[in-house]
Image (cartoon, rainbow, N blue to C red; front, top):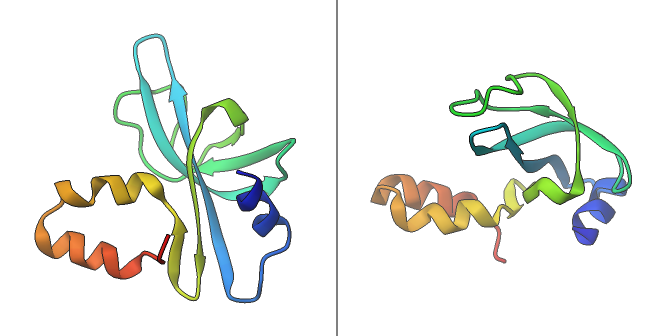
Length: 111
């Protein structure tokens, strides 16, 4: 996370579209949401929920939420059009159809 926040605070001209993945819980389960439009820093930040809830309905698509560092499950940003970070995406690659996995691999920067 320190590297993410350092890049977020001072991105190079070829870096942008910073996102965090938050594991948000309700009384029954936890769901992981990608969040964009980050404002703030490592000590205090907010971001906007970027996908529709499926199981957890304590947040909604487009809602701005506070970032609790304890629930960050992933992060990513783009450098030269390639995804830096996004470890949870990389884990899912073997589960995707061949074409979809190849398209996603083409978007990923080398780790």
